[in-house]
Amino acid sequence: MIKVIVNGAYGRMGRTVLNAVINDPELELVGAVDVIGGADSGEISGNKKNAIVVETDLTKALIEKKPDVMIDFTQPQAVFQNVITALENKVSPVVGTTGLSDAEKEIIRETSEKFDTPVFIAPNFAIGAVLMMLVSKQIAKYMPDVEIIELHHDKKLDAPSGTAELTAKMIAEVRESHQQGHPNEVEKMDHVRGANYDGIRIHSVRLPGYVAHQEVIFGGLGQTLTIRHDSTGRDSFMPGVLLACKKVRSLKGLTVGLDKLLD
Image (cartoon, rainbow, N blue to C red; front, side):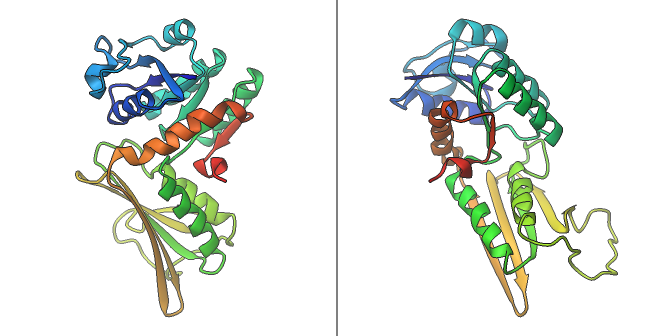
């Protein structure tokens, strides 16, 4: 049994993760943490099996519960320190919180190696989203003009999404950097053409009703090709989260992206 602690237990994703971990026969929920404490995990997740009290002190919970893995779905401003705290206690983080900078990831990599404790970060745990990114990278070799539109719920704090950012990075690996659109185009409103990553335009939509969605649009002579992925519920991320929990301890250092765990 792999012992798991869930950080960010009160959040929308945290509640879903609690339920998924409790129902997996290979995992054991040993702890739950959130800035709001007091309730038990059964109360907030709706699953009364193996209900435990939600604590507020992450370090204390890691020391007392001695988990193998910490799943983190918290906030962009908190995730970096959460990961460092877990690694210092030789607990492997499985991170779904986005917003980590490249500099922070490098520190995480160094800390992981220092404490000989692997860490896994995924911008998106949905298997379909990972396949969308992999396919987009292949298409970009032949249709290098591309723009990305990502659509999320209006409570998401960071933009662009980690998925859109990683998609752009993967595409940039196989295409030459170049400006898209007319060389003399004028933005009559600031940022109307979206963010610019190595010439790839990224557009972020934030509206109630969405969960997590992304379109990758390729343009070519007389044709367009669109790849789209939709997560219509947070349960779409659970197979990937559970897979990461089961594989993270066999990894080395920092691993980024669910594609690294797929055959």
